[in-house]
Length: 118
Image (cartoon, rainbow, N blue to C red; front, side, top):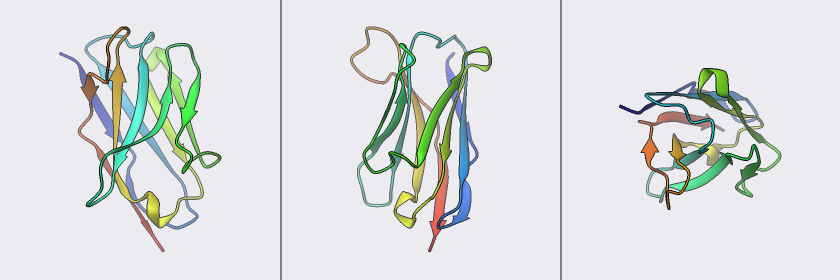
């Protein structure tokens, strides 16, 4: 059974940093797209970043230059380093996996709360 477990969320002041981790178990995702999404209260879930199966990275415009996604295949873990955090980054952050050939993300974690105070 595939399981994604996020960690690293918390409360931080504006301008601070956090590092989120997403550990995958149940199968290896070395050739999958592994992404981060977030959902703020009252808003729809939005894309944040993805580490593609070709080892490319893509980011939402709102986080470019501040967030960095990385992946450790040996640990089956994807990370999201978040710097220069802003109050508008406050949300529940989810990691997700899109396996090869799938039209959408198939597996989702339970989410981790990130709160940025002003």
